[in-house]
Amino acid sequence: MSSKSLVGFIGGTGPEGLGLGLRFALSNIKVIIGSRTIENAERAVSHIKSKVPNGYISGGLNWEVAEKCDPVFIAVPYQAQRSTLEELKDRLANKNVISVVAPLKFENGIAMSEAVPAGSAALEAAHILNKSMVSAGFHNISARDLLDPNAIIDSDVIVFSDNDECKSITMGLAKLLNGVRAIDGGGLINAKYAEDLTALLLNINKTYKAHSAIRITGIEV
Ligand SMILES: NC(=O)c1ccc[n+]([C@@H]2O[C@H](COP(=O)([O-])OP(=O)(O)OC[C@H]3O[C@@H](n4cnc5c(N)ncnc54)[C@H](OP(=O)(O)O)[C@@H]3O)[C@@H](O)[C@H]2O)c1
Image (tube, rainbow, N blue to C red; front, side, top):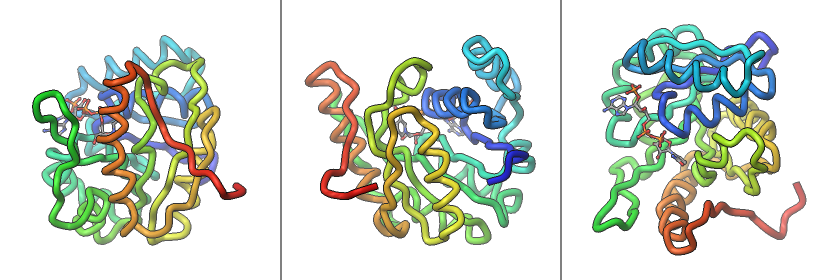
């Protein structure tokens, strides 16, 4: 990723996109927050600017982000992934696309992973975006921690991709988060394990009233 790269967020107005955007802006990365509406994008940009006044941060409609940025994060709820990506597919061709999507549903207050016919949200994204380089990661860190610029993120970020350069870009971004170790999780076929773990962590958070995360032990990174 060059210093001129613009890192974009499709659905960047939710806590996950906003939190990652804030952290990258703190690391002097140029960030564009995308939304379906300019009003939401501008509100998100104002929030990040209030925490990072000297950051390079702007907003736009999702299609503008897809056109201008590389890499581009997909940070919409799983239920919105297919329609969002089908609309942006041509604009995302030949770009690095990073999925943070965890397919989740809630029943009686319990988080559960949603069955995805393709095997995982990341594999589904890769099938739709068949002209893009797709990676997946950041599933197991709490957006609440990301949104507190002073919080150390006590977590590993496991990154998956079938494209070496895309994986390397994604791991490089993960390492910018204070406290994070980036772990190579192999190909996209493995992304489902990290996606599913998100539901478990949410249920643990509820029990312990905490922001749980994960560490892989037994490896030197
Ligand atoms: N929150 C976390 O702690 C966390 C942690 C790890 C991974 N994740 C994953 O990251 C993704 C984003 O999480 P989040 O909590 O930020 O999600 P969110 O707040 O539910 O949604 C993010 C944004 O997606 C857009 N959106 C919502 N419904 C849409 C639809 N039907 N079509 C198109 N866009 C839509 C909205 O932006 P506009 O209305 O502005 O367009 C919304 O602000 C999810 O897939 C989640 O599983 C979240």
